[in-house]
Length: 626
Ligand SMILES: *Cc1c(COP(=O)(O)O)cnc(C)c1O
Image (tube, rainbow, N blue to C red; front, top):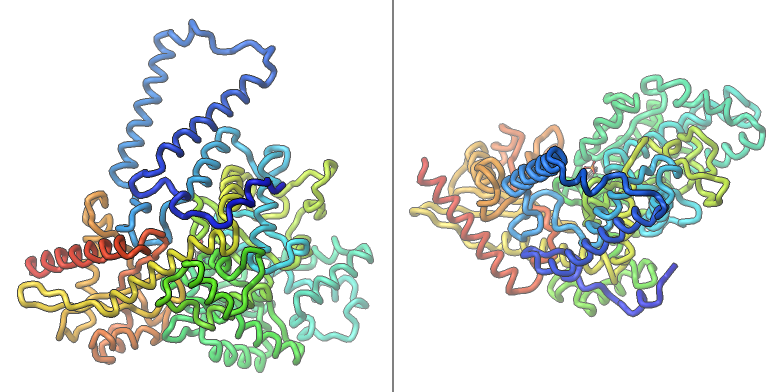
């Protein structure tokens, strides 16, 4: 239920959302945590107040009792020491590495409070409070992605990997339904040959399933789908993924019995987005060989570059093929970029027009006037996402919620019957119908605290421009500034040697990859070695990161995974193209800019000074050790 005072807040104040780099909000944090602990303590005491205490005061003073508590304290101190020595300082703007930043106070408090109740969302019986929250979060995320929450299905997974597995699980079983119907009840698919049966659009397959259910043969049909019979290699066709895919897809085709050889990588362009032309050529080739397409995966926010695939073009392509009775499943892997859709939604959760969006971003001070974001392609890609059959979203990335929380949303909740081991009364939130999540999802026992954390995060930070949009806007602006600084950075000079830095590509949203090269160096191998050494000084490699001045991550872009896309980049660093042909791989530093703290000019200028000075220091170290 909406509380009245929620309405007073029109937009969130981002600085009030986090504990803060210097624990600025510690007073609120501790008081609230304390309050939540009191709530829990009273909850226990008030459960049957007539029950006598089990632990007596006398026992609490016994020697072994006290020794046990001391042992607990010691173990916790040991843990705390390890945590303080070696943890990653995600909260600091000096950390620009993996997909991490500070996490929302609201989510952290919710998590810590809920853990004491230890809910297990596998079954309603073990989590009457938090199973309902998981389903609600599923609806919220479905709506965020543009699905009709009444028709869609979504829930919280442990992570994006499991969410991807779950979507492929659905796609696989779905693809095998029409042939299963042909075996069990051929009259329902009369006149259709196997090729047509393997090329049905998702909604038609699900309509057929409804018919099969009406005929009372669904159980029998289902036993003839991939879930009952397994997958015969290649029979369901090929899964097409961009070269930039996350490696969870490689595992997914293995785990689900699709097989590596049935996954085809589509080339990326030099902006690291899937090359839709190559996608079309591949599909045409497959069709000419009568090989069906199991599905196409588009990535919104590639793990290494943050590139946003042109979902609108992929959806358009499918529409064109459907005119020729050829169809396939589309999944958007928006594990990273999913929450970014909130920027496009106005305060009433409506997807804004391109012009209205640009105006709003600048008028409301979400992005500085000089920052021109998004590009039309990125806008169109986000707009087209609800056309996909399913989408992965990771609250533990751009949702700023602590691990481990992923999510998957599916456009048509009827797909659940393809994977469930119970009748799908899960949606009916009536008392007779317990929500037995465990029988509709990939996982079994699972944390209710994680679902509670996302739910509370969404209560505090609305899933539109007034909430997450503002927060993510700051991240995009920080990335944009960092990119511009790298682009126009002056040379670094050490003992007469000059070094330059260049960004890999203009970020589609907030990942900035970059590399250094010594001026006049013509060897890619030497350049890789230089950047490797820089990385060592900016990571755990050089000892505990607590003393590092700047921390980042790295990646290798190689020919196997990226084709010739990086060629343009190494040319920008003045290396001859032959070096790429020789080595076929380039080592880059990679900064995911999730932090909201790089946006004000003063802090940004301070950050850039720190960055420059740190790099200067490291380059000196490297030159001096030669
Ligand atoms: C992070 C990521 C995943 C995997 O998610 P985990 O939560 O790490 O399991 C999948 N796809 C993309 C594009 C990602 O960025």
